[in-house]
Structure formats: C-alpha cells, structure tokens
Length: 177
Image (tube, rainbow, N blue to C red; front, top):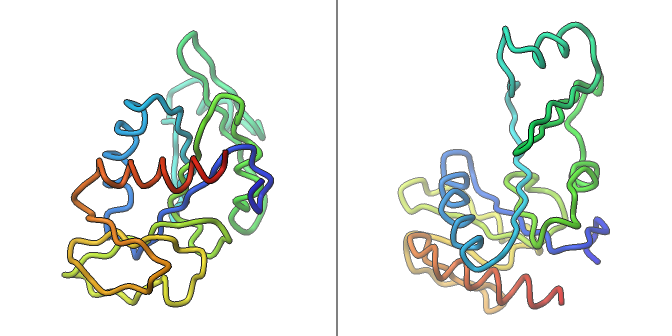
C-alpha cells in the first residue's frame, strides 16, 4: 500500500509551471492505454475553474445551491462538488474519490509536496531549480538534455514518451505487484 492507502500505484509528475506536465501526460496516457492499462488522473490547479457552463442544466442546478451534482449518460458521468473549505482538498481525499477497482494506475499532476513517487520534469531553457535535491520521493528526472544525476535517480529523455511509459511500467507497476 502507498502512503495514502491506495489500492493501486500512484505516480506524481512535478515541475515548475510551464514545463510541460500536462503535455507529457497527454502523450503518456495513450502509450499506457495501448499497453492495456486503465489510467486515472488527478490534476491540481491553483486557479478557479468551471467544468460546466452557464445554460446547461447541471450548471444551473449547482448554481442553485446543490453541494454535489452528478450528471450521467450511458457513456460518461461526472460529479461536481462545491465546498466551503478554504484550502485545496488533500491528495488523500481525492484518491479516495476515484474508483480504484476500475484503474491500474493513478497519475498525479501537481501536489508537489506530497510523499508519493514522482518524476520531475526539467527543460533547459527554463533553468528552474531542481526539485529532486529537496524531495526524496523523486525517482526520475525527465529532461530535454543529458545531465549528471545522483545514482538513485533515473534520467529519462523528455521527448521519448515510449521510454517513459516503459519506465513507469517497470519501476512503478512491477514494484507494486
């Protein structure tokens, strides 16, 4: 079991804003799906967001005061919840909301300070400070340039999504078996 009692492996992706976390996940998820994995994603954002839009019934019901609104069809369902909590929900809480019986792996974008295994992304042109020097949960660095890393870290080529998918399967999924 992980720190959060997840029934399946959880892997985070951390980097400064604008480094390409979402872009990498958009390429990585199809690679993992093609290998037969059912992937869940939790994405943290620092911004307010709307999933629904004005004029839609679910939006209007939520704006009328429903704390939770579940909209469903034969092919998709979504639960929207408004809270009065002043801060962000915890990763533990969000993991508990996913149906882990129908997933093989959960990828997490953001939640940089949580104690989960992570892949750090780096881009040469951004020259952001390294996260792995301060976070013992970083297990690999995916970057667009070769670099010298401590022996416990794996270097991944940020442009080679196939090799990143292979790393995830070998390092994360097999470790969890």
